Length: 79
Image (cartoon, rainbow, N blue to C red; front, side, top):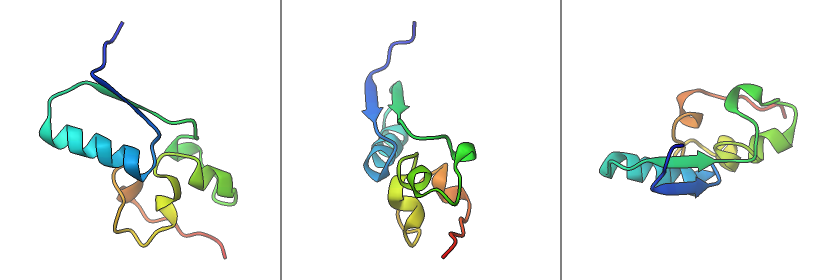
């Protein structure tokens, strides 16, 4: 059984910021959980998979607030 110091609930901008901050400044074990689909399972034509997954609505932003794995590629959304 793995024991974590922190559990981050939600992989939206706040959850990813918490993960990034702890990873940069502390040597702790954390678990990030999100109810949405994984990055490779998203469907571009389905709005639910964009907003309810890792990165949240950050995928639809101008890119100033994106962290890995969301910030490592460009998504083009259909109009």
